[in-house]
Figure 1 (tube, helix red, strand yellow):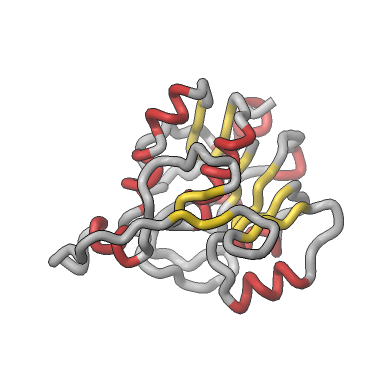
Figure 2 (cartoon, rainbow, N blue to C red):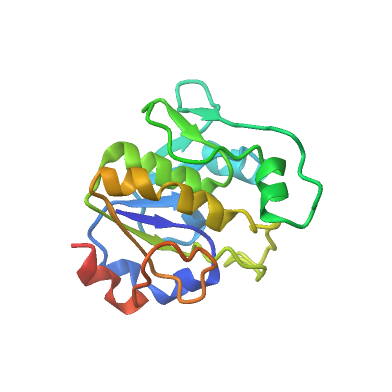
Length: 193
């Protein structure tokens, strides 16, 4: 299974050669040649438009929408350092770990939420594509807000992923999410078979 976000590194993967299921995260659905699922934790105006003009043969999943999975968030005391990953985790009400409830996804970031969705499906292998977690423009040219907390979120999922026997690799050469082994983007089609 592939989780495809909108980071520039996703351009390095030949998606036309992928046979495995693909979860498109937010704007990745706009440029991916194929996707099986679309996922968002964020029903922004742009994502609302994507949800309203669905591509054929793609299942759309939006947290918080009627009939879809629900968001599980957590918000404790506000950290003092507003530039820290902990503050950004607090800002997004991110919940560490992956939900064991198949009807719920932990919040914090849509790519992380897509990992929670994939976890519920129990694939043997997952490739992260375009999960750069950097401050560069996304493929659509837009800037993202701080993703300083993203590495912390993905790392919090490691015990559950290992316990379920799910192997995860990251196909972004420069991703700030460093808890998963890196894979050469050119080798993704062979690895994910």
